[in-house]
Image (cartoon, rainbow, N blue to C red; front, side, top):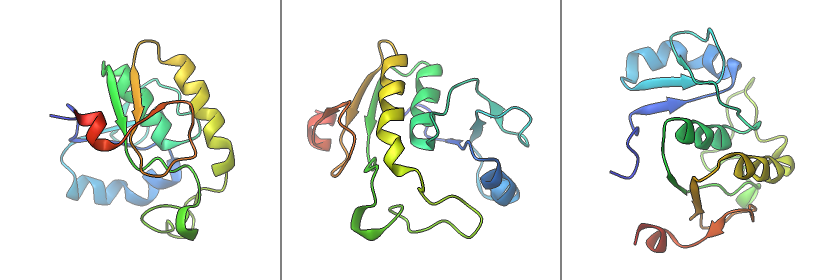
Length: 140
């Protein structure tokens, strides 16, 4: 199994939780995690979010004991004119307005993770702080 907690969801944005918590309860049966305390029925994980949900979920993985992370889809830039691979979030939710600051946040994350191995297997990425390999190489 690539991810022992693949039936988990992590979100750090209170506005996101306000918008989706009811739908999550109906459609998602896995564990819900957040770095915020008192956020609906999500499990509070006392991890730093680094102002980016992708960095936050890596911090959560490390907190849960994961020793190797393979990153996919961490482009950290507006690729193909899109703010996200899935298109813009609905009105009221953030749309990568601080994308230029994310690489520095990932540097901080890297320096705080200790012995967790992080491999960036994203096909396109502005991050330079982690080892870059193809997905095939990462899975070999």
